[in-house]
Amino acid sequence: MFYQNNTFAIARKYTRWDPLHDAHGVFITRAIPWLEQLGSRIHLLRKLVLDFDTICPSDCLTAQIWDSPSAAPEEVFDIGPLLRTVWAEDLQLTIEVIQPKNEAYTKCAAEHAWSMTDVSCLALNNAIRCIQEDVLHVRTFRLLLRHLLLRRDASGGMVVFTTSRD
Image (cartoon, rainbow, N blue to C red; front, side):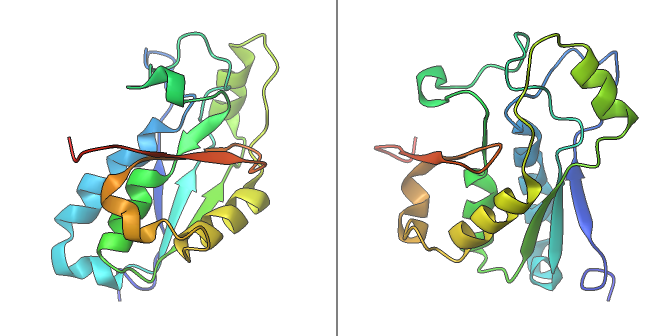
């Protein structure tokens, strides 16, 4: 009942002392070890929320560097690793994006003088649901999937495959 009747949120806690900015939602991948530690209980999960409230503006100059910068256009985040885990476990899990824009978000955005593209939660939720339901037919290639990038406003994205498991 604990797993089925609760919503679990994956969030990045913002503090003014945190030197690592996260313009591309890297914090999402930190959910994967937690999901794997659940073992057989993972199938009891029903709802997972991605809290984008403290995600940095996309044009943050101090944002974390991608492992393949040429493959990462601006204003995107990588949902691929999380979906690989969901698909591998064949989870019946609702993934929802929220962005409450509380004080931490306001402080983060105020630190950056540049304009930023807002997260479109409704559009992202629809896009994630379509990808999760495998409308793009990439699930069978999940082992070769390196990145599955979505724009913050869900107006586009990119699928990046790797040529080997390494």
